[in-house]
Length: 378
Figure 1 (cartoon, rainbow, N blue to C red):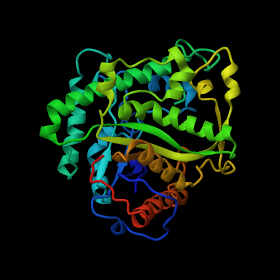
Figure 2 (cartoon, rainbow, N blue to C red):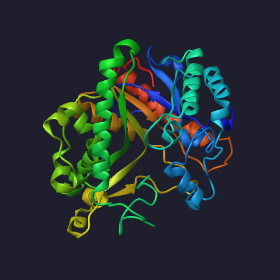
Figure 3 (tube, helix red, strand yellow):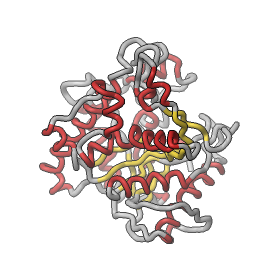
Figure 4 (spheres, rainbow, N blue to C red):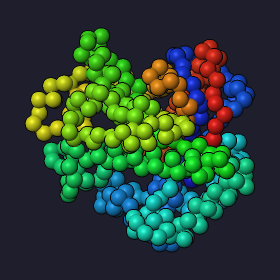
C-alpha cells in the first residue's frame, strides 16, 4: 500500500475491558457493528499550503521556521489534489469509516469573516467522494507561552491561558452541539462528540502519594474535558489546585456543557508509571504541569529504535476507567498506532505488531468480558 495514504488505523467501539491479548484472529471474529476505519490530520495530508486562498496556520509558521527538522506540510501527501485516489484506496482496503480534520485556515482564511468558497468546495468534494464509495455521512502552541514554562516565547501566559483556552473550547463545543442537535441531527442522523488525549496511568509504587498522583493525572488529563461534559464542572482537585486561574462555569454554562456529546473520542498511544511530585506546588510561578505535580516514567526501557512500547493493556485500563467513572459512554478510538521516523521503510513490521496487539486485546475483551461495541461511524 502506498505511503501516500499516511493513515492511522482506528478502531471504533463502545466498551470497557480487562487485560488479555489475542494473537490469532480475523476481522470476522469481531461482532456485527464493529467498525474499522482510518484517520488523518489536515496539515499532515492535504498539502496545497498556499493554494486556493489558504493562509498559514500556526503549524505552517512553526515548521517553516525550522522547528520540525526541515519538514513542512507544504506538500505532505497531496491529498488536496489526490483525494479521489485516497478514497478509492480506502474502499479497496475494506475500511468502514474515515475521520478527517478541517484546515480552518483553508476554510476561513482570515480567522473571521467569509468562508473561502474554494476551501468549502474541496471539503464538499471530499465528502461527496466518500459518500460515492459508501461512506455516509503539542505541549504548548508554538512560541505562545511565558517564561519559565516555554522556549522562545513571544507572547502568552502559561499560568492561566491553557485553562482559559479549554474553557472556551468546551463552551464552543457545547454551543455547536446544541445547534446540531436542535437543527440538523433529526434530519442527518449524525453524531457529535469531542476527543481526549489519554495515556494509561499506573502508580510507580503502592505509596499513598503515588496512588493519589495517579488519580490526579486522570483528573487533569481526562477529567479536565470529560467531567464538564458528564457532570457539568471541572474535577474538584483541579479547582482546588488551580484556584482562580481556572474559569468557573455559570449555572447556564454548566447546563449547556453537560450532556453535549453523543460519543467521546479517545486518542491513545502509550502508558506510563506515575510518581508524585507535589513539591512543585511550592513554586512561586505555576502552570498546568506544576499544578499537575507528577512525573511520568516509561514502563519499559526507552527503545533506541524510536518506537513506542507495545502496552495494549494500558488502553484497556483507560476504557475501564471511562466505564467506571463516566457511566460507559459511547467511545470512538480516533487515534492509535505505532510511530516511525520520517522517510522510514514501508517494511514496518513493528507497526503490524503494535496494531495486532491492540486489536487482539480489544477482541479478547469482546469475547471474555461480554463487551458489545456500538454501531457507529467515525
